[in-house]
Image 1 (tube, rainbow, N blue to C red):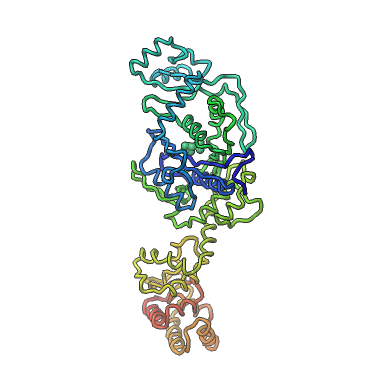
Image 2 (cartoon, rainbow, N blue to C red):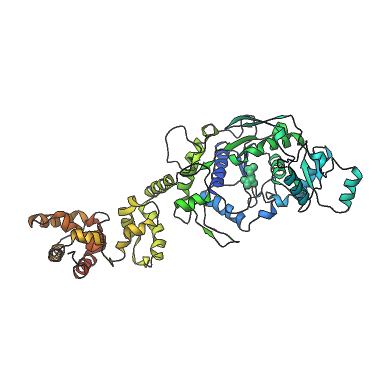
Amino acid sequence: MTSQDKSGRQVRVRFAPSPTGPLHIGGVRTALYNYLFARRNGGKMILRIEDTDSQRFVPGAEDYINEALSWLGIGIDEGVREGGPYGPYKQSERRDIYREHVRMLLDSGKAYLAFDTPEELAKVRAEKPNFQYDASTRMEMRNSLALPAEEVQRLLDSGAQYVVRFRIEPGRDVEVNDLIRGKVVIKSDILDDKVLYKSADDLPTYHLANIVDDHLMHISHVIRGEEWLPSAPLHVLLYEAFGWADTMPEFVHLPLLLKPDGKGKLSKRDGDRLGFPVFPLLWNDPASGNISSGYRESGYLPEAVVNFLALLGWNPGDDTEIMDMDTLIAKFSLDHCSKAGARFAFEKGKWFNHTYLQAMSDESLASLFRPVLQRHGIDDSKYSDDVLSRIVGLVKDRINFVEDLWDQAGFFFEAPQEYDPKAVKKRWSEDTPRIMKELIGQLQSLESWKSADAEAPVLAWITENGYHMGNVMNAFRLAVVGACRGPHMFDITEILGPDETISRINRAIENVQPAV
Ligand code: GLU
């Protein structure tokens, strides 16, 4: 393992979310790939908070990001909480740095001041439908290139608000080298003179802050979602304008996450429509009060979420599916990232959760089951770890989520209140109460309630009397479970014990109305 990339630089990557709401699951995948790449290459993972858009700032979003990453085990080496040599790691605390860099571009003529008001811009856009603020139009606008120097000075002295725009020269082929996509070339003519800074809030825009920080933080690889690919040519030009082309990071644009069905990009609405979360943690929107579900609260294990996300856009080069974080780190490489969008197969996410739950010990699962029991009003202190572990062991192969343990094993804690009508119709006849009474007699005469010991004598009694095996055993099950489902009957009765088993059969004899 090396700590350097091909060009000999130390690998330093950053996850750079904007705290404008809950981190989307696609953002989590981006963070994960950055983390895997950093760890694989002995590099550093930086978390930078890009909060320069004061209009879109959402309280609580930054804490949410931290909590989500730590839940998933995505470790951060340098960041707001972790500190580090290139801080501050929150952009709103780096205003001086951006001001200085805006000045550098203004002094070198690579940027200019623009005084056009929002109303003026709206007007020109209304008049010229394809209007773009660029080399072909800028001399008709109110900016420091078009206005006489005295006028510019007068405006500044009068305290007029302005923005700083990047001066993009037409006629250039701009090359972006992307490690997944290869070389992408675009003409500089299609780019507009992007706003880099706004005097009104003394803050840079995303583009400037992002480039300056990537440079100052010695970022070697920019790994981010495909939606940022259109910004990359502008970023390349900014590196050049600053004279940093030699240390420009490598670009890596990850494939989009696509809808589980149909065409297009995964959205929150798909999650609502098909019933899966698109956020790592539950999110309570401070403005609307709306609650969005999260993977954590929906019962997913963080290991399962990580494993599932890792395979959405990357593969290990073989068909291995189950990989813990260390294995993912050992196998991760950008060469195996795909260009094509990755379908968000949420059913597969459930399968991962199922598989990780099966791999847990019965004891660990039992401890996760206790809070579920409490939520269902069961006093779990009455049950030892041993009993809970045995119960969990009997049903765990049927669960995708810890919460499912209640559906599968709730009958161990509560005698049936009602009996599945379909099963009653099929298995409970006029004669059943009599046979159940006989069954009670048989059970009372058992020498041992151990599953392996109890089964043979009961089955022998059924056969000897010429009873119907399926009807008797299912009526027995109906009486104890309330439905014809659940694990092996004698495993159930071993745990319930004689008193509870017999009392349930008696209750059924009294309460079940045979089907007519
Ligand atoms: N702040 C941007 C975001 O919200 C960062 C994009 C990038 O990684 O350059 O995703």
